[in-house]
Image 1 (cartoon, rainbow, N blue to C red):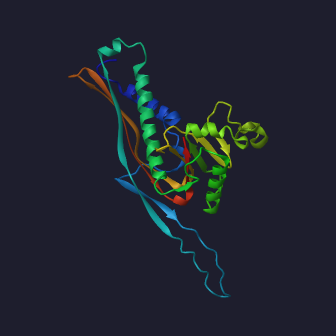
Image 2 (cartoon, rainbow, N blue to C red; image 1 turned 60 degrees about the vertical axis):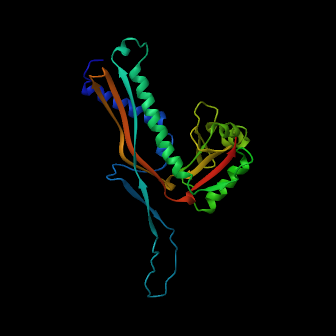
Image 3 (tube, rainbow, N blue to C red; image 1 turned 90 degrees about the vertical axis):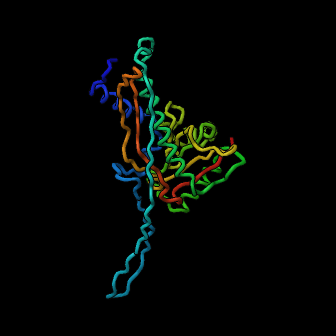
Length: 271
């Protein structure tokens, strides 16, 4: 690598970071409400209340619903993932160091994105069948009942994330794994660790919060969580002549918030 990195190289590097970040860096990002290009330290998501239909008298005015609008503040924070590459070290390496830094930076920012959303989701959410046992069909049905009682839409925008221990426990539930129940096209054994069950896309996640022996699994609707982006993944590469190395920095400015606690169910499972 020369002592001055070309603009085309920087663009290629940044493109690669974006690709890795989107592909396997973050799992939750595309499952929540998102606002882009935020200016300032925070933004707001609107939580709109439930309307009520009424009658009217003959020749009377039609009454309005007076929907409640509650602004939910989402504060952004800045995050960085950087590394250095010594000029002479490059002569001794037998692997693609740039590729390694691309992946490491993208994965680090992806994990941080998910952590922001996970932390927002577990703040004031409902706990279903907490502690005592792992993930069972009874817990799943109890959580489903909670979502239904809260009038959470069953519109294909429900998502559930469980730990890997709970994912293997799900694979022991006949209604989750057996083609007689879910059909051959929705079996979880076909290489992709994601599956639609109970009208929800289920995925395993290694970064869910663990308190004591309890893993806090999440089942939520897309509209219940907000993700604000001030600056998406951006990369800088510059040469430090004094240290004879390249500094590679990836950065982002993002925030997450819980918009509607009725749309999130937390399921605690003992490990």
